[in-house]
Amino acid sequence: MKKTGLYIIIAVLIVSFSSFASDALEPNDTVSRYLHALKQGDIGTIKDSIAGELYKKRKVLLEQNKSYPKFLKKNYREAEFQIKETTVNNNDVLVEVEVKFPKGKTKFILYLGKNAQGNWKIFKESAIP
Image (cartoon, rainbow, N blue to C red):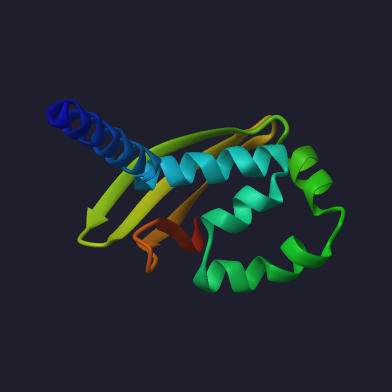
């Protein structure tokens, strides 16, 4: 009887730890989630995906501009995002993204780092000429 209880506890712990691991996003997952949020005008996910310099730059739009979600949906409605290259250097990651619009394309780099909880956050963005 004691062995059965022990096996149940072990099974519960294994499932618990497995769910924690599956919630952890890799850098490209974080970027994909962010890009999808831009297209959907999902302010909550955008705020959850960014930090630092990028958050400070977009703070007023994200927190005070009620029409920003509508703007994002309209602006990115026909956009196609593609992650072109990911460069990992210890705890810093650069992700090159290409955006195709009906009237052309643009490229930019997203800079990611881990926050105190170990989650990847986008802290900077720069255009590629």
